[in-house]
Length: 441
Image (cartoon, rainbow, N blue to C red; front, side, top):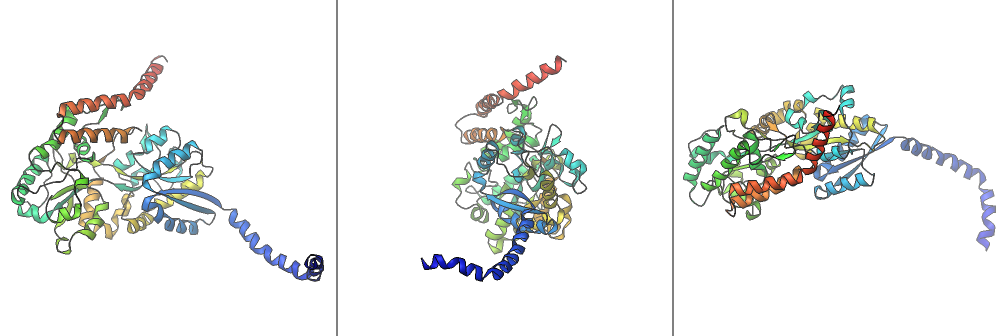
């Protein structure tokens, strides 16, 4: 009771002090109000990139004190589901990283913003600043929906010491010469080792060889499978011949305990893989073999010009539901700057999407990285349909069956085509309706 009755008396006695304290406390509160007046952007990044981008956005905020960026890091394994859930629940971020094979799906959902108006007004970004094949992965019906952030493709990693022992000073650039070189390697490594590793549970190599042969993979405006067509069959037959002629082991990557160890001991001597393995090879190959591996652009059926590879990577996109498109575009412009992309490369090892960034001496001086730049000038987008990843998994299943000898190539490709045509049935229906509507005008 005493405490309660004496409280007003203490308050009256300290009236002037309390007033002074109120004035002092008002200053930081006002400061917080100014802080809250900044535009807040939500950015979703995946995997390691989602972690590293936090450092980049702090620099962006120093340049743009009127914008505050909140970064949410999402594991790649959960990213697609998280993005779909965000779209359905109307809680998408303002800006995000988006794998470029996902761009068609989110564009079809109308979840992401068309970027042509923003590019038209931009003095910092232009399609010519990026590798054409990678830029194309973001363009649907002539409309760009994303800006390449980092790029990815596949090249040939190989043991140059073994190739030299086989009589070749450099990697051949045509299929026929490449296969002769693989046979020469096989002769010197013996019956229990192989020229090349083509994991049977990876769809990338047969797709790359099909693209090199000129196959569109899907035909009729991406409404039908083209896997039984002569162009794809040419690449597929070349792929199968590497197993039938004993140049590649018929095993999946889950059957190889340690890829780097097997590469070092010469179990296989060539491997089609991506830029993440530049760092892995430097870290995991024995010190005495560091000068014995190299990279090269992929050989083509008719020489270098036909030696295309996959156009991969991640793009930066704006979400339609965002109320801060101008600020989000400013962030995309910042993250696309050559100097920022170089910093991002140094932090992650992800290759810059901006061609200008490749003039940096650190990139240009490394021969193994330069092979990726050369390959990135010859890349092709996979079909830009939301169903592509599902199609690729079906292709992978059928390829493995053929390699392991459980079905013939004819049977597998015919079944694959039926399955894919079934998946694309709605696309055909929509296309036919559109053609009928056009014809009735």
